Image 1 (cartoon, rainbow, N blue to C red):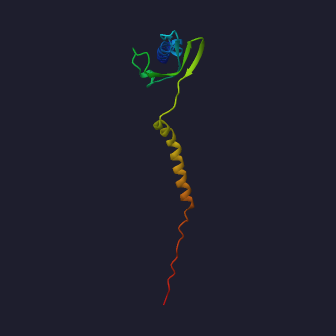
Image 2: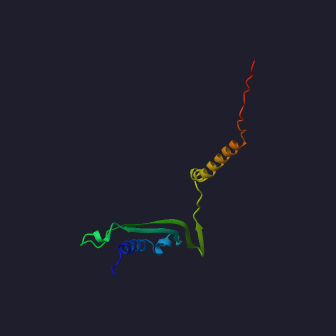
Length: 143
């Protein structure tokens, strides 16, 4: 049986990711400081991958020279994030993590969904506490 076209898409994407991510990406190349200290960067690597495809139309109506009426695609992404430095020197080894304090803008953006939920809940409670309009019947008087 012939190989399906999606196999080629997946193999190409996976080999590209494999080329990008190796041990030197996670534990970087050592750098020597003038005082003899060796500094080694350490990173976190995350990646994702997806592929998909479909065959179009009726096989019996395909052109004779066509192998398949196939359309597909694949994609991937990688995130390389420095997390620490390994410092070797002066008779000791230290792991120095990178401080990841977020800016006030980032913190605000993270809190927006919670704030929106609270505002919506406030208005729902307020609406449920409103007295319902009572129908007022006006009696007619006959003289």
